[in-house]
Length: 404
Image (cartoon, rainbow, N blue to C red; front, side, top):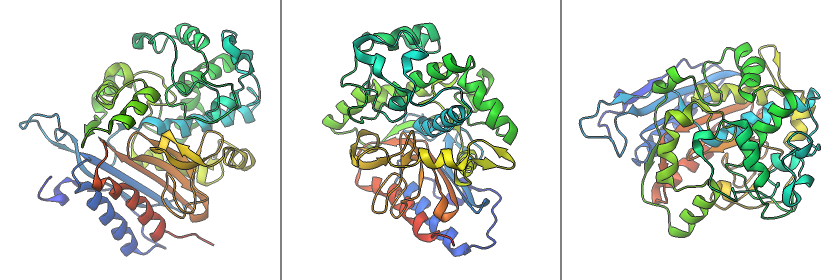
């Protein structure tokens, strides 16, 4: 831990008009308290209220202070603009693109997957709809069959063949189990087949470029890989039963998944479930699109009606592997907040967005006119001080109450 936290803290341009600056500082104290637990080499937080950036700060080191770094490694402080892999927050972005395309008539969510991927018919998969995939009820929460060749993960023909060979573990539509890694390849190939375009190109051309985003797409160009700060496994190992469930869900242990996610192969791929590269500033700006009902700075991405339908609870509240077996509400592709608990803190029933592995989240809360992104580079196991992260989320909601 650095002795001087100010030396590893960066504050971006903030507008405190119409807000109590003391509330901002209380929220930031929750961040520094979380950082002081020693499990996060770097943290970024960006809050937008009524479209104004009221907090945009970063603390820690982007490079050189991870648990595996040598003592003489050069330590480079994180900035508010440093990009990180934000893992499954990608699913909120992919869900937005999917609803945009459905609204424009590229497909219907109730179309069958095999209408676009003819290979996707075996073992009863012909009954699977795009809505089943979006709601994590397609019956393939983890990959079955031969271990995939990760060197071919961007090969559409290979991906479609492997998806076609999968055997559902339950009939499509029967129940919801989080599809951590199978969701992304399915959505990528459905969208590619239906539109004849890469989802990466669609996201860039229809949303990111018109709004001037630098990052926030799936992966990065090869020349940008060195600019992406790494993630680190931190803290104690997961308990054996939790570690086994995690390995089943994502196809590997934390000590396997996280190092691979730092590689050029992963960071240059197109994995709409898992490899968005962004920072808290840009993620909160993307959340602002959702907070404003699908429009930002004159760019209309979705209609308010489409977004409203996507954020209506569609699954019964039950323990979810996506949140460490805590109960959670789901919309169509988006995680939903709740009054008492949830992925976006307490008293956030109107919030929706998605979390990322681990202690990463982006969400919109229209009742608060609030768009939030939290990015952190540590991936801790169970630890008594791990609750400092959810306490930060609670603090944000406590300090920035509902408007109107």
